[in-house]
Length: 96
Image (cartoon, rainbow, N blue to C red; front, top):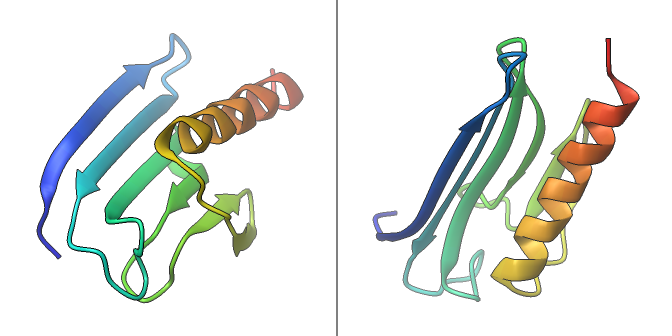
């Protein structure tokens, strides 16, 4: 589904880990009633370990390590806060 990109931010940590957040405005549908498509990912050692997205036909959901669970989307601020808090918690728990 095409849409208009309204936000894109990418950050690389000194250890090589990456946080990338992308949000598009799209036509509301069954899986994106809020009219937003998003992909927020934390990549560590080349693998996604945390992700928030609403991929085709899956609706809003969250990946954390090996778990995938439904995510209750409220608004963009809450989405980015939840994601960045998960990244911070993960980094604290998995420090070398």
